Each structure stands twice: as C-alpha cells, then as structure tokens.
Image: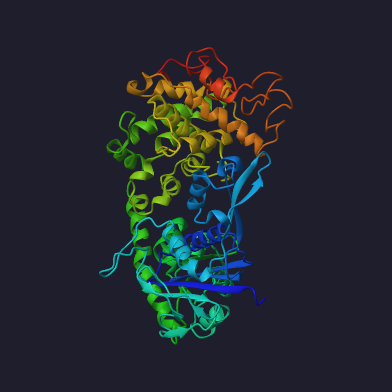
Length: 611
C-alpha cells in the first residue's frame, strides 16, 4: 500500500447481537460509513465488513489522511460600489470583508463575466481524518435500523445490545474517543469459550488473521456462512441423504456462531408418521436445525445442528440436542393425532366464532361465500362444481386445529393431510393445500383445477368485500393483502387460461356479500388495482406482449380478457367487469361494461343470493 494511503479499523464489541438482524446491521453500518466518507470527498479503495454474534466491524483500505482541499470563491459587491472615487473602500467593502473574516486589503477584484466585483478566496478541507472519524462512526451507528434500543447499567447511551469494547485504529495509531460510553483502544476479545481473553490488535491488517488464528473467531460473515454451508452439505452426505438448506435459516445460524461445528443428530422414526412439514417447522423455527431428505425428497430421521464450540465430547452435545428435539416432535405428533379425532367439517364449525372482518362476518361465513363462488366459477369453466364447493367450504377448517394454532405455517398443509384422513376426493384435499398459492411473487401456481378455482374464489371474495367497504390500500397499509391478492388473481387468470370476462365471477362474489357490504358502492380503485397490475406483468416480460398463454396474437388475449392497446386508444380490461371513468383516467385502460362506478358484468350473473 502507498505511503500516502492508510487503513482504518473500527470494531464495536457487544453482548450477543440479535441473529435475525445481524446481517442487516452489518450491511447498513457499511453503507452509512461509506456514504459519509464519499460525501466528504475522501478517497478509499475498499471497505470490508465483519460481523459475528459479538462484534460489528469495518476495515477501510487505501484511505487518505485528510479531506481534500478546495478553493472557495465568494463574490462581493461591484467594484464601483465597493470603492469611492478616490479608491477608498466603502462601508460595503468593509462589511463584505468582515463577513468573510479577512481584511479589506486581502480582497481582490475580478470579473464574474458581467461586471468587476470584489472577490474573496479561501481554502476549505484539509482536516485530519483522525479528527473526523469518531463523529462519522458515531453517526453511522445512530442511523442503524434498530427497532428497540436498550440502555445498560447507569448509562444513558442506547444501542441494540450493551457495548463492551471499542477498537479504533488508524494504521497503528489508536484514535482517542468515546463512543456509546466506551473509550476506544486497540484491544478486542476472542471466542467466548475457546479464547476468553483480551487480544491486542497492533494494526488493522492483522485484525482478521488474529481473530481467526488466536481468537477462534471467523469474523467475516460471508466466509463463515460458506463454512457453515459446506459443513452442513458434507454432514448430510455422510448421513446418506441431502441436507436441505433454507437461505434465511443459513443466515440466522451463521449469526449465532463464531466458530461453527456441524453435528448430526437423530430422532425416532415413529415421528415420520406426522406430516413432514410440521416436523421441519419444529426443527427449523424452534431449534434452528437443518433437515435431511433422501433421493426422493422424503424426510429422513436425522437433523443437523451447528455448535459454537469444538467439543472434546461431541456425543454429549448431540445427545443434548436429541433430548431437546424429542418433546418438540412429540407435541407435533400429539396435535396431529388429536386433530384427527374430529373431521374437518367438525373443525369448520369452530370458525363460527372467529371473525374475518367485522362487517363481512366470520371465517365460517367466508367459507360459505367461497363455496358458492367456487361452484359458480366451476360451472362457468365446465369444471366439477361439487368438488369446488366442497373444497370451498372446507378451505379454512384447518385454521381451527391445534396443529395450525401451534405451527401457523401449516395452514392449508394441515387441511391437506386431514382431508386425506377423512377420505375426501383427491381434488378436494389438494385444493385445501393449493388455495394459498401463489404466496409471493414468482411462487408456483395451483396444479389442480379445483385448487385454482378455490384460490380465485378466496381472493376475489376478499377483494370484493373489502373494497366494497371502501377499505382501499394506502401507500403504507394493506392489512388484507389486497395488492398481493390482485396479482395472484391475475397470474392465475393469465397462466391458467381462465376467461374472467365471460365468467363474471366478481359480480357473483359481490352479490354473495352481506348487505352491509354489498349495499355500498364499490369504488373504481378495485378495478384500478387490476388495471395497473396486468400491464405491469406484461411490461416486465413475465408474459409475451403478444400471445399471452391462450391468447391469439394481436387479437384479444382470451386467457386474461386483455387486449393489446389499439392505435390512439386504450386497451380493454374486463377482469373487474365494470366501467370506471376514474380508472380510465388514471391508467389509460378502459373497463368493459356499461354499469356505473365499478359494477360488474350483468351477463350471466344470477340474482344476488341465488345459486
């Protein structure tokens, strides 16, 4: 490194940081300091972040010693105003000199391109960076996204966790300062168990090596994460299977350890009779274990955990983990067996006491509406309406089970297994599982026709009901997930080649709502969500501009009821099935139909409340 460039190291040592926030804190700390240095015009070649459970650190390479020097020019009054006829300075010249802290004799005159004026030139910058870095670091830490800050002891300082030590090194020089109540030095600490002592950092460049070789700490988060991944993959292979690595779990586990050691444990095979998703959820959410599957994707009775130490007796560590996981899996097995004692229809009755929305009734009421709408859609699409209505009525039944109460991510999945146990038709219990698809952008769609129909009916009921009450999403609030529901509906319509314009199911849904909701005029914003979302999907090349699946080239896209824009005119979007001048003005799209506001196609829609 050049003699004119320097290294700067800052390390904040703390009590164990929140594992789910560690990577975010490190990334934002990096971003804030980089932005601050750039704003000052300071040159540097790289900033390397370090993050472990007990430290946040940054190493800046190729740093200049001072801020850049700039020449500042301040223009004053015109020369003929600043000096009288005898060439003596006037009060205007004296005031300009006093304002800039210089003598009148130090002022010069020059043309600003129009007229001769007084001019004051001064130098700015050139500050020693060692004087500025404490303030930059303190401000960067203050800007970190910390939901709830804490205090410790009698101090007034606040941070996400109590601060224990602070390293501030500019090359080999300690930068004297106090941040968050701790004086800076050149002493860090190693692993809490393998190296529970103070380590002296003589220079920034030896920081990472010192922690790795003496401190038993892999300080680089990315390097440590890759180390964890390799160990988990290798351990899974030794067990004769394949470890399934969830990205979020990998980040969280990496944030829990400084010296990762992968260990394999085993649980009793009897637990494999429980739905695999429940076992995986228990292992992942409660114990932070990775699960292992065979070549066909079936769960194996093994798990992989990450210890933070190299134990001299790893068998004891494994036995402890096996002892802990057993009651967790026993709970899942108990819930599964208990729930099976009642049919899904019995569980559904409990939904009479669960409110969906105050004016839209209970979840039981919602399932009734879903069933009616699903049957209507099925008949319009010439699908099996009996399956659709049955799946609609049972769609939320598993929400009343003990399994879903304990493992919220089992909704739909639990219904799938309990539907099998109850002897429901295959299309019905698959629909119970697929009703929530797609869950997020890019997620898979329902694979069965009944699943797609129930998924549509569920979301359209929510959209029609909530919009019917005038509860339109805002920029910051969308409690019912209406935007996500709209995009999900559009994806199913386009990719599953459903023709909503001819089906008119939005109007049918509106007719099935309670009078308190159906009696209110549905505003244009409901259709506007569709109007905005579909062209956006097309623009993002999710689908071809011409020839959306089921479409006919430049003509009407039969799968989604969407037309390419005509020359000089807007396209036609008949998903909402109503006309709205407001939507037309906002989006340039027209909605087919003649009804006022955003009503629905009346063609083929039974009278409200009719089957």
